[in-house]
Amino acid sequence: MVDKLSQPSGFSYNMMFMPKLSEENVRISLENGTSYAVAMVSKRELGVDFVADGPAPHISKIDVDQEANSITITGSFYDVIEWVANGAIIATGTTIDLNDYEAQVSNYVRAQLKGPGGIAFTQPFGIVVNN
Image (tube, rainbow, N blue to C red; front, side):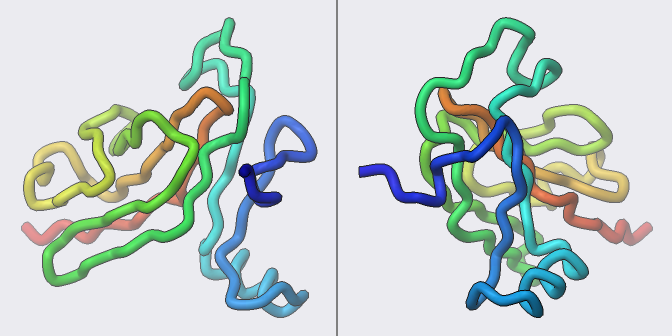
């Protein structure tokens, strides 16, 4: 069964991580960037001929491990998670170990989940590079 969260009302929308639905939590989510975007049309990432079929990718959890320098995404309705830095895909998989990609990451990394129903984009995670 598909949950209501994966049923879009248009071609693109934002999902927010909130403990409870309220005006205050929406504001806090927007201010802190605890949201992600979803699109069923994304010509650059999915191709000009892509037609969404089924539920869009959904992110249920993002774990940032400061000590291990890693980020892990848990979700559903996707085929691949791609990690992007400086406009290029640098890795795939549910977890990225930033120590393995120091040469490719200058100041941010973000994830995009692709599936038959579209694409979900995380906010960029700011990276501090110690030289």
